[in-house]
Amino acid sequence: MIKKLLLGTLCIAQFSLIAAHDLKQTTNFTDDNGTGYFQNVPKTVIIKTKKFKVRIDKQPNGNYLYQSWGANTKITAKPSMIISNGELIPDGVGWKLLF
Image (tube, rainbow, N blue to C red; front, side, top):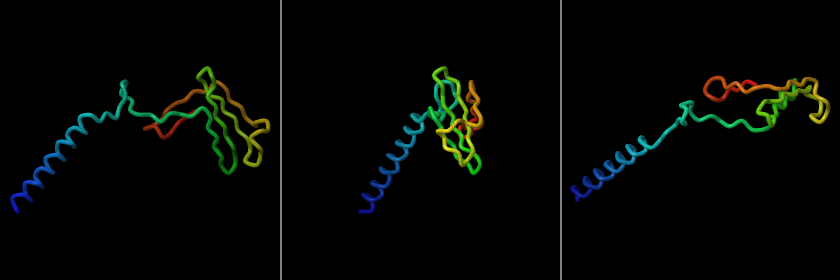
């Protein structure tokens, strides 16, 4: 009985080590150019703060359009600031994006 129990635990341990070894070899957390996985930026981002509403759109030419309104202004109204031909600058490990 004890021999069967020990043999069973040894087999489970061996299978776990083999599975962990295979997982380590097949897991690749970087893409071809070595930059790592990067979160895709959506076509339109709307950010609301206490003072402003900001909309950032990706244009067909690849540049970005920045528009901002006051916090109490509707987004359908004319923006108080427009910046066109912006570019995306990734900063840090992928969570901080500059436009």
